[in-house]
Image (cartoon, rainbow, N blue to C red; front, side, top):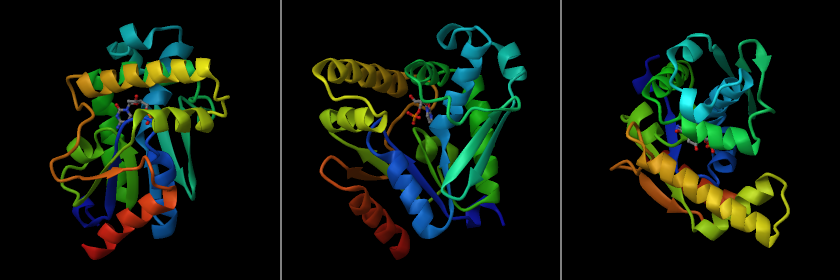
Length: 224
Ligand code: DC
């Protein structure tokens, strides 16, 4: 089966809009795989830091990428990411890796590496793929493109809850600033920046539950 015949649902949007919870549920309902592409950039940032380099400065160093091997193994309701033989799935959610993932994502060679893996997965499986450039760059021909957005206050709160952090004034302030910096980085980079694809359906998730967002997407998918 070629990628044109596959069911590929692209979900893009900034941090904290609920992409992961929505994509996971959608994949479960449709019985297809969920691919979290942010986890791939995170895995690379983790590796760069592990070998003592800086994601911001050294992320595009050819030698680093040449020695980097990554396997993304989709599983029912979850996935594993293996970097040079080490399972890193549980190690890529720290604050340092979060920042580093946005830093390495600006480099064209890094993006090319990740996009190859993402397209390869699209050749093999029907899937819901979430990220920043899935509808604009990875699978521009899929008819199913969704862009999730939400008010910044809601995104900050979701992010803190997701990370199991207390919702204190100090945490809120810090997360506000983290999210704004990351949005800026992701939207203003030169290669494959975060933007709404011309034919994407925009869903504002600020006042919607996960199930309401999933329902909206399913309706579109079932009607086409
Ligand atoms: O979705 P996330 O927060 O786990 O993503 C981490 C970073 O990876 C994000 O700040 C930007 C980058 N990213 C990207 O550039 N392109 C993607 N398709 C997915 C993530």
